Length: 220
Image 1 (cartoon, rainbow, N blue to C red):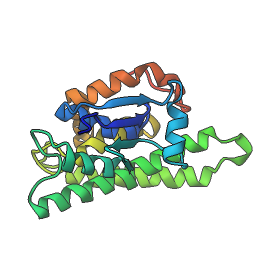
Image 2 (image 1 turned 180 degrees about the vertical axis):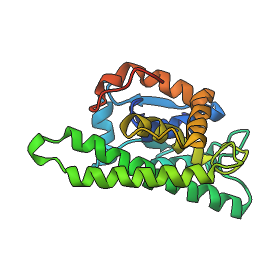
Image 3 (image 1 turned 120 degrees about the horizontal axis):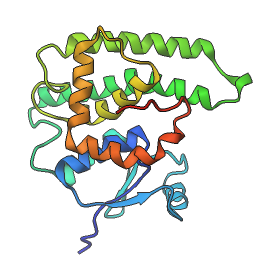
Image 4 (image 1 turned 45 degrees about the vertical axis):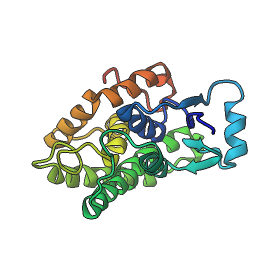
């Protein structure tokens, strides 16, 4: 019987990798961290997934792609003491819906700013960046209303949705600052930063802040 722990191909500064790391740290799940700056791990990743996007999880010969799917896989095959996806089907649907919100309307426009900054000046897309800023402002406003009376994204239980919200709001506020009028969003971001699982991910990523092309702020 193969009792080897799952292997995670990841980089600590990646928001999507942090999303999976939060889930692993929440449950204390043993895993082998294949850090992508260490020799050979990038080549292994490319052999597993030619897109070379990460995180990627390998467990018992199975390769699992995409952060949300990895957390779903961990929920099924390496469950922790407190499920990140509720057993109740309707509650689980709410968690998955908020997970998609944070992926599509916080992470995606935030990354537009970053990818644009990495382009040569002549190939930049200022119109696209303005669209991304407008989407973030709309998302912040929606989340402000949504968080009324809630501790976490879907009520009082920390879930899959919060695993993504933590790094995505963390970097979004660096990129396109959350306006002060969104007090509930700021408070939620602060609670996420105080969560031990995410705080660990933030500290592991701290040595790589010089990678942030927009300039990492001197906070958090």
